[in-house]
Image 1 (cartoon, helix red, strand yellow):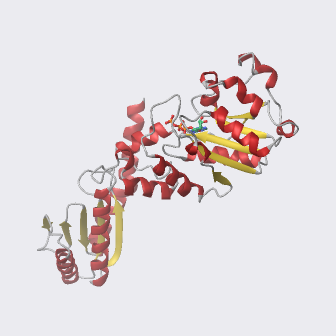
Image 2: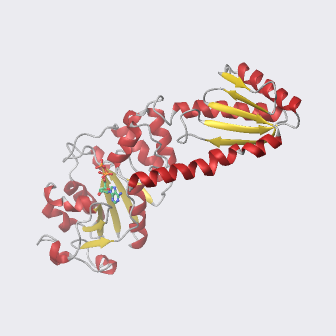
Image 3: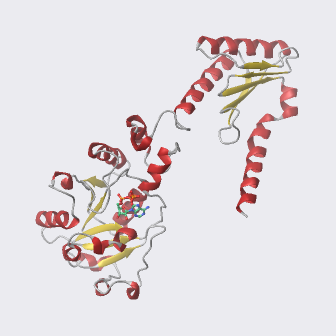
Length: 341
Ligand code: ATP
């Protein structure tokens, strides 16, 4: 039995990949063809180019090797119609049972598809629940044409080439391409929503309004570079117990706070001097420094990173790690909870 899963994949995301791979395993499908459409008949043209959508799929499928890219729709004239795609599979495969896999939202709109009545004649329809759009699959709530086709199990699908409708439960993944595109345009990181190589590619190609200046992109890289340089300089100066705190989202003051100890006033001052020299060599001048005289606590502010150099007893007393760590996060959590009530 063979699975076919079509879509725009603009871009491909885990809401496509995980449920389909789960269906593949549950139905013991020999092959699953992932079929990107040339241009969707019911919708606006995709944002990414065909080449980009294909590249993203290829990159994504390296994490899902049991799913295979099938480019047949891209070679067809005019818009992609599923009826033509299924006919092409049918010609190729004879009577092998075919399963057209789709999300519940797609199944809900099936009657608007070109020659939709032909579809269950050409393949079984395997419908995956999709968060936010489950049409309900008790026979009574389905259209009349669908009711007698409802199947109660995978085994039945194997006994014939087409004609049954199976509602296959899958672990829900609430991701949509629309929401991924919007998140990218707003400068959010979508690393958990698309496979990592796809996210790298989107950034390289600046697709979906990704721009270096959107928050969470270039600025982070810049801050990351400064942080890494500072850590190296602190290590070279024999700073003790170097601790880095990522405070993005906790404060607008800076991206990273580094805390480091020195063994004596003199050592703290010398670590601070060496840090400033090393950063200057890379073009990063401090915006300000505080506390140099006493040298119990020197703060050097480079903008995207702030470094606190302290004697161990001062460090213990002020406990910046706790203040900017669990205390700050707990207070933000509490504020969030209050605003939801
Ligand atoms: P868009 O948000 O742009 O409409 P999409 O995320 O729905 O895109 P498509 O390429 O249009 O992605 O969808 C292809 C197929 O994947 C459809 O059958 C759709 O129902 C299904 N699908 C997409 N996302 C999910 C999901 N999170 N869970 C289950 N099925 C999904």
